[in-house]
Figure 1: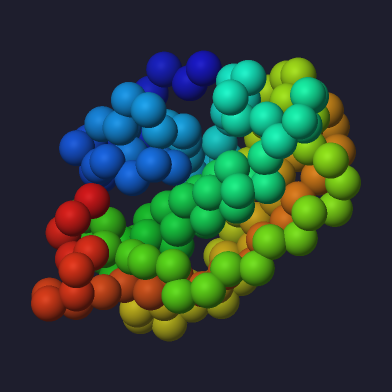
Figure 2: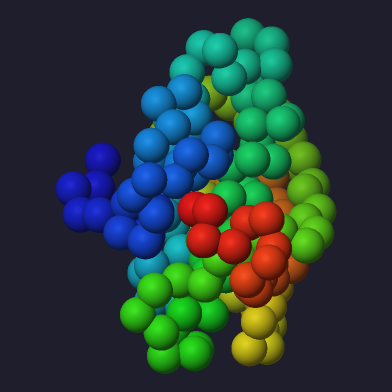
Length: 155
């Protein structure tokens, strides 16, 4: 496991999101890292994340890809705007393709990259890799929200 702080730990240490909140002890606790133009996370499933023996639940797959992609968007928008903090971003849409059963017997790698952006939104493409194979993909749009939105400064 990576010893440096993840994007979530750096920019939202008190976040309680089920997928990526460092402060949610019962959550997935995704730890995303910027690596050049790509964002990478490694995660390990536990037995209660299974849909059936040996295969990851589709809802967990969606949460992993959604949260990891959202952090890619937030960090990208922060850099694009020259900010010292990530803007509060939310998912506008995301579309997951479950390409094959996702095994739970090893490390799962998430990779994401921003493929398009404006000042307040980013489109991200991501993939989930298990046992060396791309098992699931995602494409989503993530929007920076303003004061007055329920998510503003909530994570």
